[in-house]
Image (cartoon, rainbow, N blue to C red; front, side):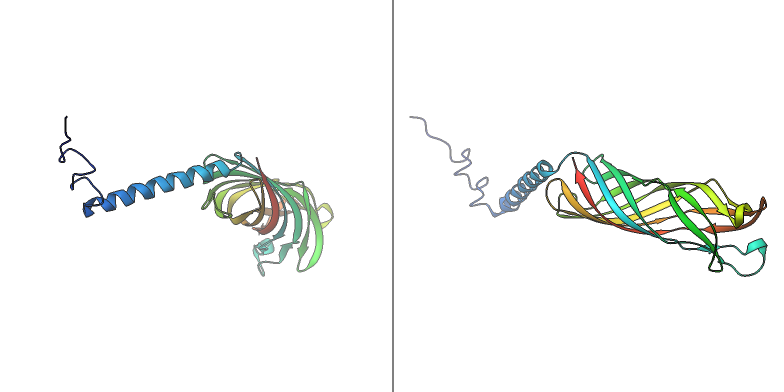
Length: 228
């Protein structure tokens, strides 16, 4: 009858038996931790819904209201644009669990324009914004994120100083974002979002440039999201 060699039997060889070789215990612990981490990551991915996320928000737009002196003389910041609370729809696509692209949309919004606090007219604008986001903890119930991108604001229906005043037709600027999603379940989530968007325009009187206004709004919103 053939007998096993203790030197080649892992169970009886002290050099390869974790119970008798303390040097092997860290390696065993590391392997166990790696297996546990892989299992946790797999379960988290399985719990994620699809790559699309649609949110509906109510958002308050608070302009910075900075402007150049009118006609190059006198005080600055005499022109202002009214605050507004607006509905917002955004559509996000997740390329990875952490990285998403978000398109922010709304319908044309009307704002009053004031000179030294007195209404001088109004305009409408549509400010779609495209943002690249990084989500810090996509598998957790609380998922904070940051984003940066570009805003294009289309300006129309300008009626200032009974037709004597005007604005540019559009504005392109940087947009920055921070927010957090709170997952209710696999698909639904609550959202709080803050954006700072650069929006501005030259101001014309009788066709001549008279000033420049920086709207640059801070946009604070809350909403509901659905991922699929």
